[in-house]
Image 1 (spheres, one colour):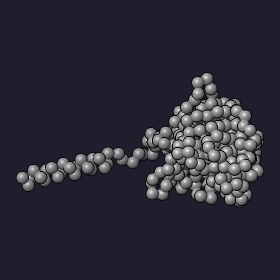
Image 2 (cartoon, rainbow, N blue to C red):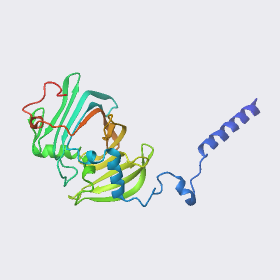
Image 3 (tube, one colour):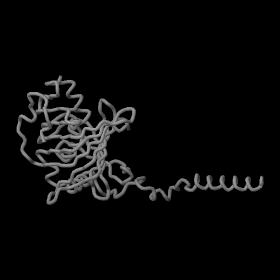
Image 4 (cartoon, helix red, strand yellow):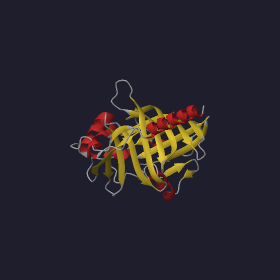
Length: 274
């Protein structure tokens, strides 16, 4: 019996060893087999990658949308791992013709969030002033808040005069190969973008904020029939590596006209505006 137990123990140890050391570190000559370890298609410039991303996202309409409306819901994460659901969530955007600083509020924006018909978040920016549920916000507080959140729209201005584009080492975004490009805006600020290598979809953005390093990961892309616009249906937002929330967009409208009063509210909404 003792011999049998010893044999079983030996077999178990051998199996564990085989599992632990099934893969050995790759040799230098095999480095090309590690995906994203070496640069794919080094002949592609950062500018070319961005141009292809424009085409993949909707062409001229994506780069110059003028306005954008998004609606869906938002899952807010808390430090203990629990969540709060904003079951109605929407954003209206009116884009500025240029953007000298990627992380400063520009154009116009309105954001509403609701939980069981109770307003959970309300923000509006008219191009100069920011409003919340209490009215006009202090300018310093508003600027800090927007700087923690503004960044994705930088890609639309990436090839404008005064902007710089620089390709970075490739990486994996959600396990998929991605080209990484650093944009430097005219003010000197930088923003990282990731583009899925298989189709040039924009799947990542990262930049520094007062709250720390901010990242967004984009997935679940969808289109409406007959339209070129490609919308990310899921946007996961992180600060210092910890997920803060997931915005789930289920509908969009591009290029529609918005009334100026949308961004210059006289008070918080009493019900969702969509």
